[in-house]
Length: 489
Ligand SMILES: *[C@@H]1O[C@H](CO)[C@@H](O)[C@H](O)[C@H]1NC(C)=O
Ligand SMILES: *[C@@H]1O[C@H](CO)[C@@H](O)[C@H](O)[C@H]1NC(C)=O
Ligand SMILES: *[C@@H]1O[C@H](CO)[C@@H](O)[C@H](O)[C@H]1NC(C)=O
Ligand SMILES: *[C@@H]1O[C@H](CO)[C@@H](O)[C@H](O)[C@H]1NC(C)=O
Ligand SMILES: *[C@@H]1O[C@H](CO)[C@@H](O)[C@H](O)[C@H]1NC(C)=O
Ligand SMILES: CC(=O)N[C@H]1CO[C@H](CO)[C@@H](O)[C@@H]1O
Image (tube, rainbow, N blue to C red):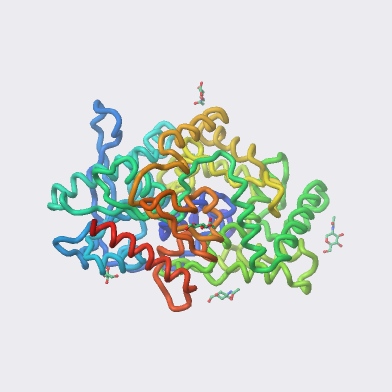
C-alpha cells in the first residue's frame, strides 16, 4: 500500500485511541503518530446524549447526539462524580477501564463519565465538515456541552448534590481548567494535565523544548539533527538531487518542489518524526492500542549518532525509514497538494475527518499553536509561521488578521496564564514540548502546579507501571492527595 492511501486511513484511526493528543494537528506528526494495531476491548457501552447545536442562540433549537461512556464500578452513593473530557479525536473507551483516574475513582468511590468532544469521533453535530458548519466547533461550545451534560445527568440520576471533578490531558486539560473557571457552580475541582492554557499564534518554543529533550539524551543529538536538516535544505535548492532524495526517504513519487510550501511540507513531515517521539517519550500508552512505543528519544538519537550509517543526512533518512517500518508505511507521500485536497474534503468519511480538519480549524479560529522553525535555538529548518498561517486561508478562508484577533480573544476570554479560579491542579512534564504554554508554577495554593521531571505529554494520566520513574509515581500520589483534600473541604 502506498503511503498516501495508508495515510487516509491513518488520519481516521489516529485519534481513535488517543485522549491526550494536542499536537497531532501537526501533519508530519500525524503521518507517523498512528500506532494503532488492534481494537481494544472495552466493556464500556456507547451511550448517546441529546445535545444543543448552538448554546449561544436561544432561537436555534437544533439538536444532535453526543457520545458518552459510563463506568459505575466504583460508584459510592456519597462519592464524587468524575468527568473525563474528550478532545480533538474520538473518545477512546479504553480510558473507561484503564488510566490513573480510575485508581482515584476506586479510592474515592467515584462514578465515572467520559464525554466525547463535539465534531470528533462519532459526535457529529452537522451533516458534514463544511466550513460553514464548523462555526459550531469551538471550545466555548464544547464547555457549554459539558455544562448541559452535567446539568441534565445530575438531574436525571440524582447527582446534583455530588461533587463533580473534571479531568483532561492536553487540549482537554485546558478544557478541564476552563470548565471549572467558567462553570464553578457545576464543577467542584479539576485536574488539568499538560494543558496549554495560553493561546499563541506562533509557538516556536515547541521545537526549542524538542531540542532540549534530545540534548538531555545525548548532548550531540540536536547538532547532528541540525546538520542533517541543513544539508537537506541545501539539497532542495538543486533539483538534480531529487532522484537521490526520493530514494533516500522512500518517497511514493519523485520529489517535486514547485513552491515553498512543498519544501515546507516535506521538511515538516521529517521533523515530525522527532516531534512525535519526544512528545510521547516513554509514556505508557500501549493500553490505548498504540504501537511503536519502543521508539524513544534514545532510539532516535542512537540512529543519529551511528556513523556506520553515513553522514548525518543519511542517518536522518534512516530515522525516517525506521519510522515507516515501525508503522508499516510502504512509502512517504510528501505532496502538499494531496494534503490540501485531503484537508479540504468535508465528508465525514473523508481522509481528514478523524480529527485533522477539525483540529486545524480550531487552531485557525481559537488557538494558533503553530510549531514553527522561527527560533534559532532549535535544530530544524524550513517551516516558518507564514506556511502555517496560510493554511488557515487555504482550508477555511481565515485570514492572518482574523487568526491573530481570534487568538487574542481566546486569551481575553479565559485569561491565558493568568487564569483566576480555584481547586485546579496543573501537572506538567519537563520534556513535554507543550509545557511551554502551560501552568508550570503554583499560581496560588488553590491553583497548584505539579512538576514531573523527565516525563512527556500527559504521563501522569496513563496507567502506572513498575518501571515508572519515582517522581512520576509521586506526582500521581500528589494529585490524588490534592483531590482528596479538596473533596473533604
Ligand atoms: C470499570 O473500571 C474497572 C477498573 O479498571 C474495570 O474492571 C471495569 O471493567 C470497568 N467497567 C466498564 C463498564 O468499563
Ligand atoms: C546520487 O547518489 C549517488 C550515490 O549514492 C552519487 O554518486 C550521485 O552523485 C548523487 N547524485 C546527485 C545529483 O547528488
Ligand atoms: C519495537 O518493537 C517491535 C515489535 O515488538 C520490533 O519489531 C522492533 O524491532 C522494535 N524496534 C526497536 C527500535 O526496538
Ligand atoms: C472525500 O473523501 C471521500 C472518502 O474518501 C471520497 O469518497 C470523496 O470523493 C472525497 N471528496 C472529494 C471532493 O474529494
Ligand atoms: C472569504 O472571506 C471573506 C471575508 O473574510 C469573504 O468576503 C469571501 O467571500 C470569503 N470567500 C469564500 C470563498 O468564502
Ligand atoms: C518543565 C516545567 O515547566 N516544569 C515546571 C512544572 O511545575 C513546577 C511547579 O510545581 C515548576 O517548578 C517546574 O519548573
